[in-house]
Image 1 (cartoon, rainbow over the protein chains, first blue to last red):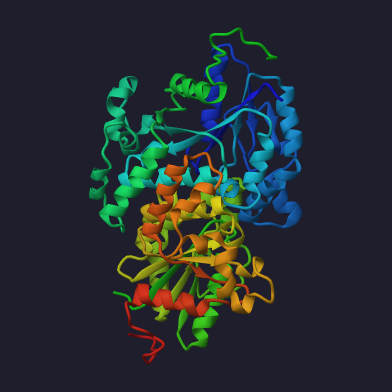
Image 2 (cartoon, one colour):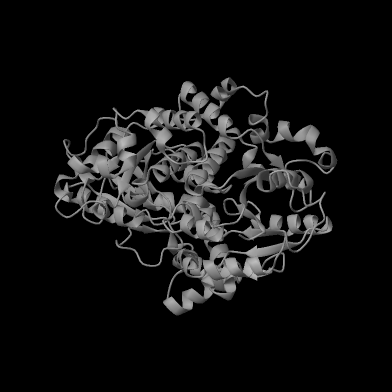
Length: 272
Length: 272
């Protein structure tokens, strides 16, 4: 059993997975934790961090286009599917870092991992025998629109059924929906600005979603809202770009994955 | 107001959108309907049909890689986002075909259309002032696994919140889950083989989903199932590859989009 805790960063294209991988790793390293940054995206071109483990050592989407005569879409899909052949080696590389935590930056397109046949099997192999938690990232601009916020929660729920890992929800890019003046006191503003945060707050009543324009009847919309609120009771507002909310996020990770053991209050070491 | 009815084919990567576009068009043309086949995927490389309207006239993902120095993922995203600049012209091209129906084959990656900021706006422009219905395609192999079937229904529901078009659900590739002997009598077998079909049948009770292994409590899982069944009461089993189920699919399209007017029972004409 590996002693490295695994943090799987997932979310739709453009939700800020790579930026979070960098920001969270920096924050944790600053707290004297050892962190392995893992690029798990064979189509990554430029990353904001230097990966400690990199799937592109085994497979690159761009090379597949030339080698197999594929288009960009075909190459993306084939490169992720082909990870099944290398996932054991990648797992070994991660374990060899002997880091406290591995932050694993999933492919840009959530859909190729979550809604194709091989994806969940690859993730299962990746986290076999290790403690793992997923961070599901939302873009704050989408999460601010009520119908889109509900859509995003259904998407993370849909992903939960396929990739059965405990999920921590995080709304990223709050710097894009709050002013510079509001950002340092984001807790005061974020639930008013970002509907998804408001929806998941304890005092929000699903009867209010019937005002949201959808094709669904109010009764059905309310039921969906209530189902979602039964699953998710919390979302962490963050800005990976500005390094905001990393302490809250780490607190959640720690609760989910370490079950109370806190590397921050214990002596950190390479080997547990 | 255009007189062309629009059928928007959507679904995750690999669900068989292009194959369905071809099969459905052939079936309808065989019924003396005029059909415009629209490729709306700037990253399409080879299509099983000859498009009457083709977005690649305006933009190609592969060219963007060279012109803008993008990787395959960046090129896919940029090419779909850039459709916003051409959607009015594409709309005009579709109208000029004066076809009874336009079948619009969306980009391979559902996520770029549904879960990024510009996608829903592009679709809104595309169907402005025309009657439109979406066909949401599932892969029968995924739909056969209970947890994945629920995941797929949550995905289509998630998409409904972002792209507010009436949805017809179809389970494609039933030829891959039924034997050659069973296929001609697929109605007798499909609900036993494909859990998603069973789940949406009238006599399925959501209390049975509590047996499905998930991270959710049985109570929550049952509520989610009931919410989903309130939204969706029907799914059409098809095989685009084998041309099976096209008549049922057309029946649904006709009910949804033409509201009772049946081109098949009226005199078809280029102009209504």
